[in-house]
View 1 (cartoon, rainbow, N blue to C red):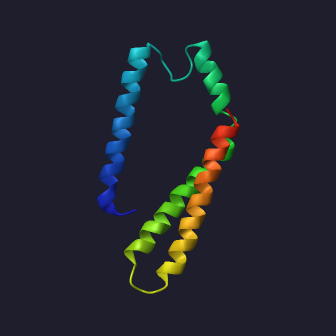
View 2: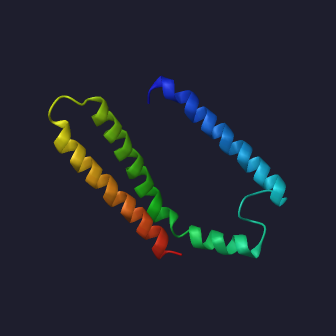
Length: 105
């Protein structure tokens, strides 16, 4: 990862932590998805998805990184073929994530 991007990641993590704290305070909870029967149902719905969707999310992130890297190296002539393959792969993974989310709840 580019050192220039590290502050963005730090900022996003800080924003997530702050948002989580506010949400927990508003809901008067100690942890997310653990206070009500409705939360329990949502938790039971989400948990079976994670082992299936998490690897796809990682693959999607890797494909995005490769697409960005490919765009940076444009002008070599080979990138058009690679771009198409990466874009097709990215589309398939995104559709798989969508299908997984729809089919499990």
